[in-house]
Amino acid sequence: DGGITQSPKYLFRKEGQNVTLSCEQNLNHDAMYWYRQDPGQGLRLIYYSQIVNDFQKGDIAEGYSVSREKKESFPLTVTSAQKNPTAFYLCASSIDAGASTDTQYFGPGTRLTVL
Amino acid sequence: EDQVTQSPEALRLQEGESSSLNCSYTVSGLRGLFWYRQDPGKGPEFLFTLYSAGEEKEKERLKATLTKKESFLHITAPKPEDSATYLCAVQASVPGNTPLVFGKGTRLSVIA
Image (tube, rainbow over all chains, first blue to last red):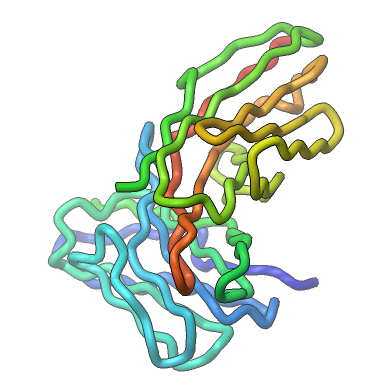
């Protein structure tokens, strides 16, 4: 089955710890994205990557870091510098059709809770 | 700045009671407008992409329409399984891959 997987589904972190959220896709998509979703809020873009070894900051990148060493993988690290990390994190991917409209497909999400 | 506003925030319908959800947008040229469905605790599921004013797309009980300033998601004779949050997003028409801008969603509840 082609799709996007995220792990773990639930993650608990103590204050001051860094944690890494996994995102893998087997759709052969070039572009990958990380969003944060809070109750009553829209999806807010954290980072995105259009190609291996390259990524761009989104609207709320502070306190987060990413890497893109392989086309199919785009892990997100939530660092201790992120002041309010408790949220639902969503990973997405798209073909990245350049000038054409590019539909994003989402993974199932990871719910991070800071204890 | 590109913006998306969805209304109402929440909508409660009786089964079979048709209605519409609204997505108003301001964008520097529209490349595409997207509708997603999101169930609680899950990732958004893609429904439709609309590209230009006047375009319509249908899927089962859902029909999406687009004008130059807004999009409507019409739900005809809804069933309880249509209960979900419906998200609207736009992509601006600028060179290269531009990120989507999402609205906050409309939470739909359909009561049997």
